[in-house]
View 1 (tube, rainbow, N blue to C red):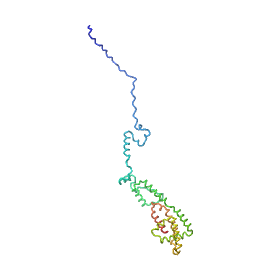
View 2 (cartoon, rainbow, N blue to C red; view 1 turned 90 degrees about the vertical axis):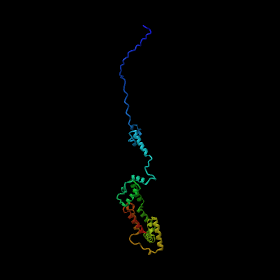
View 3 (cartoon, rainbow, N blue to C red; view 1 turned 120 degrees about the horizontal axis):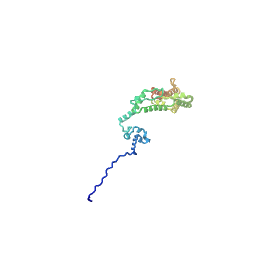
View 4 (tube, rainbow, N blue to C red; view 1 turned 120 degrees about the vertical axis):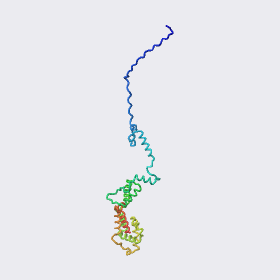
Length: 269
C-alpha cells in the first residue's frame, strides 16, 4: 500500500431529528380592548355639557374649531351697524307685530285701547322683546301711581292751613280770591294757578283777601253764583284724581277725567 495515498474522511450519516412538543408553552394573552374615548377624558371634565357629543378626538376637535369661529363674532350690533343689521337684530327679539305684545293690568282695570296700541307700536319700533315691553308697561303704571299725591292727605292739609289762618272766614276769603282771579287773572295763567300747591294757594288767597278787605267794597265783590263753592269744586277734583281713570294712562276715560279735573280747577279761579 502506498503511504502517499490519502484516506478519504469518514462522513457520519445524518441523524434524523424528531420534533418534540413543548408542553410548557403558553400563548401570549390577548391585549385588552382600547378604552372608550370618554374614559380617556379626565373625570373632572367627563360630564361637561360641551363634551356630551364628543365620542372621538375628531368630534372633539370639530367642536373646538366651531367654538373658535364664534369667539369674537359680533352678537349685538354696534354703533356703526346699518339699519338693515339693526332690523335683523330686532327681529330676533321682538314679536312679529306690535299687536303680539301682551300687557298686564290690575284686576278689573279698564284699558284705553288707543293709548295701548300707540305704546305697542313704539315698543315694537324700539325692538323690545315681549318681556321688556311688559316690564316697561307695568313699571310705568307703578311709577305714575306712585307719583300721584294722596288726595285725602292734601285735602286735610289744605283745610287745616286755611282754617288756622282764616278761621271762620275761610269760605269768604276763598270766595273773594276766586272772584278777583276770575276777573283779573290772564286766561293763559289760570291753568297754572290751578296747579299751585297748598302753601302757594294760601299765600295767594291771603293777599287777595287782604286787598279786597282794604280797597274793595263788599258790594263790588258779589257772591259767586251756583251751588258749587270752591271747596266743593276742589273736593270733586280730588275725588277724580284719586280714581283709577285719572292715574292709569291706559284707562279708556283717562283723558276725559283729566279734562274734568282741569275744568274744576279752572272754575275755582
